[in-house]
Length: 89
Image (cartoon, rainbow, N blue to C red; front, side, top):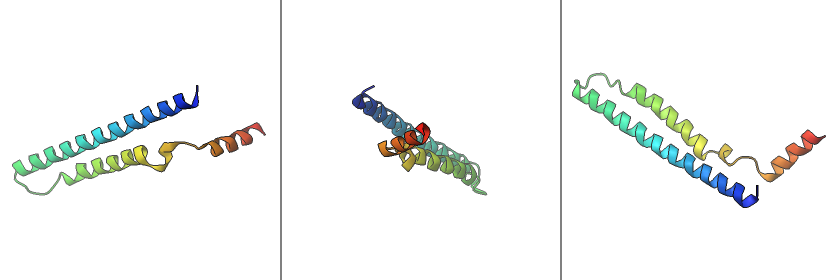
């Protein structure tokens, strides 16, 4: 596999991950809004939607880290070469 083909595959993977993150964020916001709507229509007592919204928020944060975080880029060439030297003796 050539370098340009590998780079293209990485770019496609990155774009898919970013699209997936934004789709997930939109779904989380819509679900949160629906829960707040149900809460509002049922008497507006104790604000119970905060608990599932808190869980969704944690999921969104981890999804963002997985999509945009430092580990997303993968190892650089010097790290690969260093690991190869360790494995090769």
